[in-house]
Image (cartoon, rainbow over all chains, first blue to last red; front, side, top):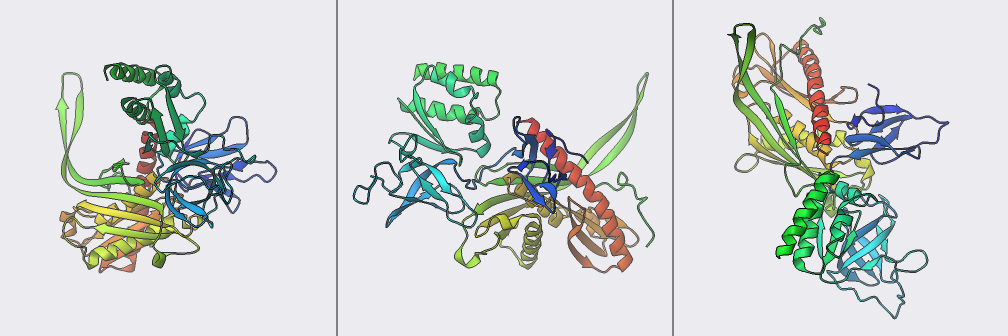
Length: 234
Length: 245
């Protein structure tokens, strides 16, 4: 069976032979074994339009496996010595040094308690090592990273939904944003934090995100209109 | 052995499979598989212009299993493996506590899933597979393995290949594929084979009863052919789910 881009693949499907001469990247869902390329997850076999980058787009995934340089949202579960332990939904808790915050020194510790939410970047994510987080960029600035303010709401969703809503042309946030002002943090680990002016608005945004998972653009517009109409009564 | 490849799959059907993925909200992957036995009433309907042949399906009983997969998750220190993920299986019987036969089943499922998973890419973690028996109308072990495989696939964990389990029984004179519990009453031996999707190699084989070497080979051949039907089913299932997205 010959598999081309756009086909449905199942684990174990032989996709082709590795070409030594061509520079090709085999991304998630693919593995090279004895010069043969196999699929390891089920989904659609895809290629990035502008690069020789192939991957398998899975249809449903919930468990997060840390990947270096991804932004994740986690809950601080433990404070011990000079590190925080952060639950990011992976098999192991990630560590976050208290020096990895903007303006933090040995004397000036960040004010973070157990149970707080942090939005952080993974700097170490290897299968043999504990994942490590930072809340600063390479210039020592916090940017969008850091502890999240109080009063928001966090929920978990599938990793596919997260990837979907982080696409530049995803319509939901713009449509909702015309009438509701809200803040949102989306972690690649399937955790989303939302804070709007009122609690009903926060709930509405959360539900809209979850409900939009399998909707088309027109359906999203329609749903957003209904949500805004409902909120007017609150 | 005489080549029995002339054997026609259409004649010896597997019981129809039905599967739903992501049935449970909490686990990372879940699947429900039912394997129903039925008999067909074939009748002819004569109309003015045409004569139709109508098949009416009567479902007698189903073997139904729900499987849930958690993983890769944190592992207990005593179960930790430094070079690969440790796989745990829990088999829950319909009622009561698991007995020795259930433990046996658990182990077979665990070993089969261990072969199918690429456990080396998640060292020091655990993959937990929970199986809940819903109904047993024959072929429970193969149904469990297929459900576990579908749940693993649903969770998106890396796998070398998929597996398909096919059971068959040896009666006085012939081999019956995918027997129901009523068929099994007249069996001399019952065999379950598990094949991989890549090369259709035998992954696991579980037998009970008395049979000859030829009978074993013949049933292996029949089951291998029938496993293609299950792999086709898996593919159509994934296609169906992808269309929804």
